[in-house]
Length: 200
Image 1 (cartoon, rainbow, N blue to C red):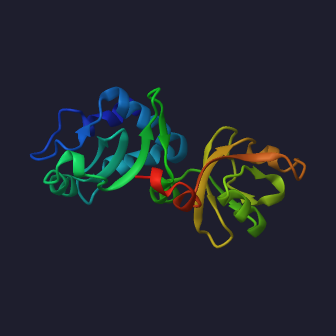
Image 2: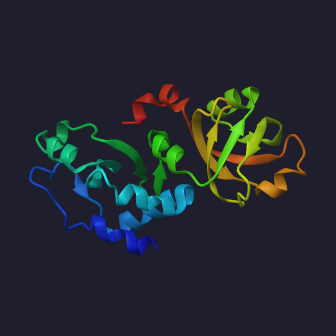
């Protein structure tokens, strides 16, 4: 299924002036898509095949950016060494070539997520300090969420505050004790303050 989506963004697609940011290789694209698919499932197609124009994934300084073709052409006029960012940073590749989603991808994950978790006010503060979610902080969780699924974390006002991975399925959550882990923390909006220098 991931292979089917590789077509629209083959590495050969380049535009004049786009050399500041290069296209992803097939292997890089597969890693990015597999990670996104963990959170948004088949909704990944909505990022690749958009009715409002051509949108692309590009690599710059080990970070993956998602942007319109038009923005990519504009970014091409900026020297590579001086370009900090263009479009939305989805995540970055580590030294070991693993791909990690960053908090800057939250807007897309929140809109397209398969599974969501809502936290109580006490749990919200705990989570945005970088901590895992325990049962006592859980307000509710999407029906049918399995273990090890990507979830977007929201507060009671439906505002996305981060994302993580389920430690238990929805069904298992009903019989857990208050201190049992339900979601492993992956990223939260508090990183905009804690790790400001590393996000770009």
